[in-house]
Length: 160
Image (cartoon, rainbow, N blue to C red):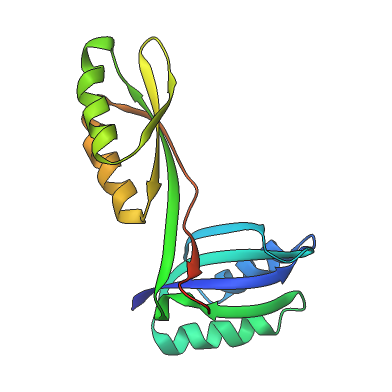
């Protein structure tokens, strides 16, 4: 079982997300992350789904996806070089005395403080999933009040 990142080009129509995610659920697959947004073509959206499975099973899922009426193209981009990113917003407890230490962590991760409250900071970090996970772990001792992650979005490298 390995992690797969599947890019799906779909018609921008109501109910498409439900049909695609339902297909995964009926097959007993867990969707680790899903992102959907506008694509380079008007009227089409790109879904990026991260799931786990063996190659044969993922191939079957791809074939089933093509049977859905609004699916245009399905590619397992994890089998080729790709660029994958995730965004995390992390609200932490940060008394003024602790802020220099927190800012050191933020700088190390090339992250940014996007909001400062009397006793909190909101940190924005962009990178691969491991980078977000590592930053969350380092910020836990300060007390994470809220955490929001976008899920992975990805594109194949080069001219593919």
